[in-house]
Image (cartoon, rainbow, N blue to C red; front, top):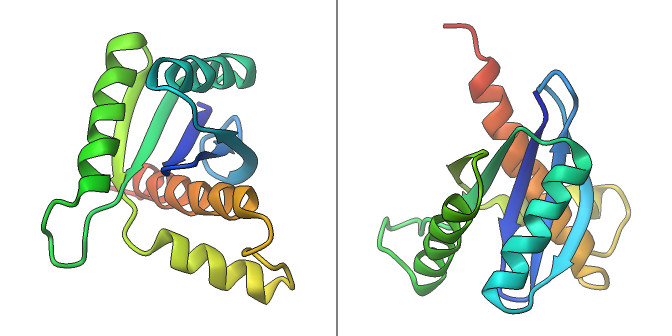
Length: 139
């Protein structure tokens, strides 16, 4: 089962895709944000083009647990995405995924401040991998 992972930001949507077994996440790029309808259309085009059977969207939950403006915007995006597709759309707590992505890119010798799309894709990969690990955990 292929899963498309999303890190929905203000300027871009980071993308990651699982392998066909739904075990390993890889970064696949980023989409520049436009209006909401165009964003949804482009995400669904990516899902179709890549054969995704499910989508997981990272939700930016604050460390304090309080709802932020960004969290509300992402939840509205998820609501619109669910209304526009028959694919299963799940959410995942993405707390600190961008911090982790920056750390990993620095360790790899990359400069995430110069390529924000790469950072967004790395964040989407972290979100998706955590989701896949949970799905594949023995019960």
